Amino acid sequence: MDIPLIAEYYLRKFYGKRLPDLKYHRGLDEHSNIEEDLLSFLVQQSWKENVRDLIAFIRSIVTLPYEEEYCYAERGEASKMISMLESGSEFSLPESLARIESAIINRSLELSNGNQTKSSQLLGITSRDIRRKKSI
Image (cartoon, rainbow, N blue to C red):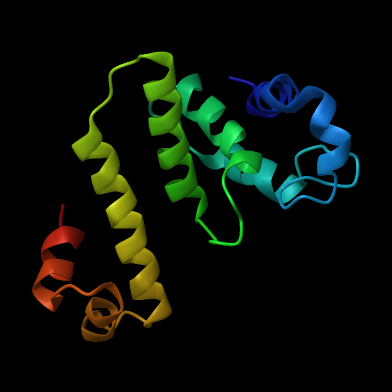
């Protein structure tokens, strides 16, 4: 699968005439193309649901607000759920939410340098919950 070509195709399909207004948007260069760092990230992903995940992620580049600093994994999963819902496709809400929850827990552990107690306080859950959810 040629990830860069597919990503650029769907970026133009979703944002077409709006692309010139989006230059310098995070993830896009001054010509409204996908930045090299982001393309490298896209190429390294396994895209478990094949092209559907990639399309959802590309759609999320501009759709979801960056002020909230979503990680790529969380943003892609959230966008995939929205896309599938809008297209009438079935998906597993519990599985999707578990992936987002896992990414948030991992991010909190990174921010707390692996300290599960501090991480659990950040998230408002117990250290036991952190250990249990990490093993899922």
